[in-house]
Length: 302
Image 1 (cartoon, rainbow, N blue to C red):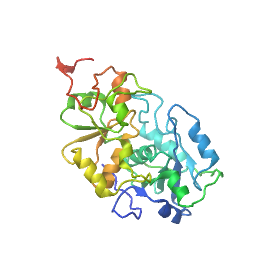
Image 2: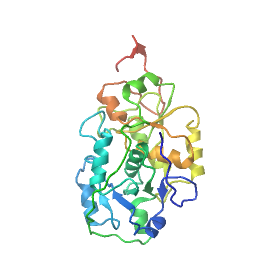
Image 3: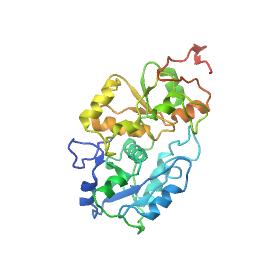
């Protein structure tokens, strides 16, 4: 069952986004938990080093690889077991009644992963800092190098992920669902592939880059602008699946659709990393491509 989004004083009701100004106004709230999730591809320690150099007052640090992903599973950032995830966050001081605000410095696509995870598991008090730490600094708000000493808490979450689809189910439904790919256009088209097995995109996927959810100031577009964007892709009709490289930036599209007031999409957590690791067919260029041919009840290999 989907959680009820927390109201955070933004101009649209029930969205999971909070401005730097609104966050600063409640920075001393004892029920507030701020989480720094800065992370950089191919630089596993740089996120924590950035946190050590300066972070929001009271913020703890959680790592995408170590805390928000399982050690093994489909794709580069498989979802952890919900019980393990709940214990990890509880040990970091996040409890059932807390408001959790996540931030990064890349427009919110890492922060959106934590938001999505908590939301999917029924924690309705999660939000992303709009504009992240750059917007916080631009608003003249302070940073600190002091590290909090969190008191362990009990975090009650659902026992399983719900709005997810695995590779086999997605393969069987290609052409009958709207598949969105949140990666940058050059990766979608197959012009570059810095990390996954081979370039391209999952056949039938439409490119919906996470970066296009933001304005020039690095903050999310208005709900109306986001609704226009995703409706133009057909996201207001039928089932929608969000994907990316490893199930992280796809959560940014999920958050944008929530802000827009559209139905929540389903997440393909393994995304392109899982798809190509399994040797599945891909499409190249700007055209979405057709569903792969089916032979004897299964899709033919590439």
